[in-house]
Length: 313
Image 1 (cartoon, rainbow, N blue to C red):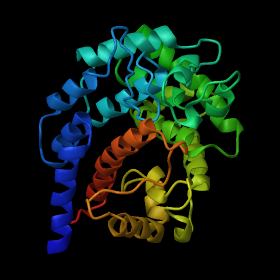
Image 2 (cartoon, rainbow, N blue to C red; image 1 turned 30 degrees about the vertical axis):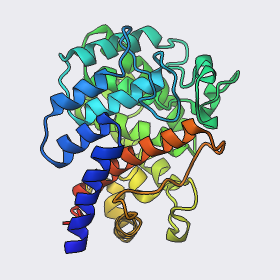
Image 3 (cartoon, rainbow, N blue to C red; image 1 turned 60 degrees about the vertical axis):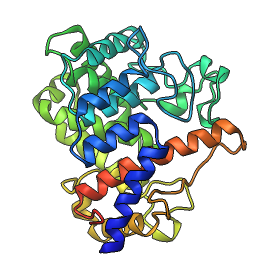
């Protein structure tokens, strides 16, 4: 146990020395009882005057101007902290999302042509028709943000529900979905859980039907062979199972235990995790991105270990 306790102290030091101030603040707030106002302070540093976010808040693309995808990354941090809807950072973000919503598709553009003008991972490269690869990643979750942070009959809430209607039609019509998109739907379902009765009013399906399909698609994504963990880009169980109350946590207890063991066994000597992906171009930007991702991964995985009662202490 002494060694494990040492690991956590190592991680804390590594994050404070090497991660971005944003991750250091998140670590302090989520793992050490620090102030969430400090995290909001650093999130705001990535926000532009139009209310959207940029400046590499998602470290795999460095577009300084606002994009829906960078705004989604910021929104996840704000949601994690349960930031109130009256906070200026949230109000400005909602304004940006209303400005950039595509009424025809019900989506937000996932990748912009401007991405190509700044350092970025190959999967963030824009080309004609690229939205087909992304679909409702991150649109399903952005719609959830509008509903979560807006008054019931506001323009923002109405826009969120119109987007949800289109997103749900897409979800219910397919048999396989990329795990990033599934995750966006899972987080949308977390929001809609508090508005269950409204799902059937806005879509041809009940909350239970939509949730069941989301769970099914999530289960189909998971890499269930532990021998492949760490060597492929397929999601581990904990990439899609976010809490002990998740239905898949109850269905796959053995896999879950193995994944938690895997997290603890693969912490490196610095107390963080090595990445299983990179840009593949050997660039300095790629190396910077990798270091930033290690900080994000450390905060995220320690949160999972905490949620499942497996913190090394």
